[in-house]
Image (cartoon, rainbow, N blue to C red; front, top):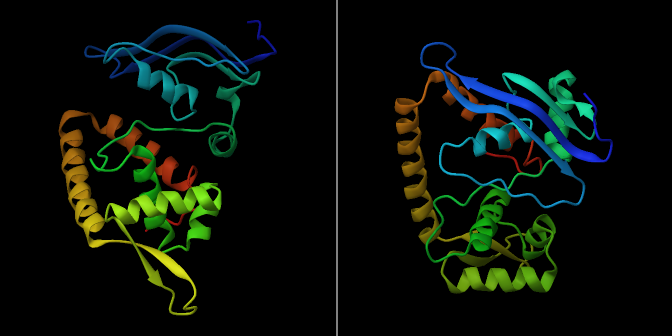
Length: 219
């Protein structure tokens, strides 16, 4: 097989089969794709067409049943778990589809709330630094969250001149409701998918928590 040296992604005859045997499902059936550096590519298709499965392959979250995948000209199948972990942490960025967003918050504001919650009452400067925002931009976003009632500013007990950002009871109430709903959805997932598919989902979530969010200690 000839690998194009300027290709960022090169896959050939990728197949992914679930439940091999009588009830097998071919999620990917001999898919080939080449993506070059600086290209913008959209993968579209109807529900069940294999988009998510293909993205899992490209993101090194899953392995194909057969076929070849080269990333920067390197054979992904020959890489160790540590090498794949480094790739997911340093080479590939994941932006997940919005889920369970608070109706009165934009997607960006929801993301900001998650940062504030994870950082455990940060200052505006700490929030700005983590989110890679300028101080004026961070202050604007915080003001919007305060105005909507999801964040309050509280004086730091160690420095009365310093204010910290604290999620309000309004946000916590909604978050608790969302968490309960997520648990309900996961129970439904276990009922409708095979143990192998559930294990794969769990592995993806573990990678997200442990490798793709190294700045945050999840509780």
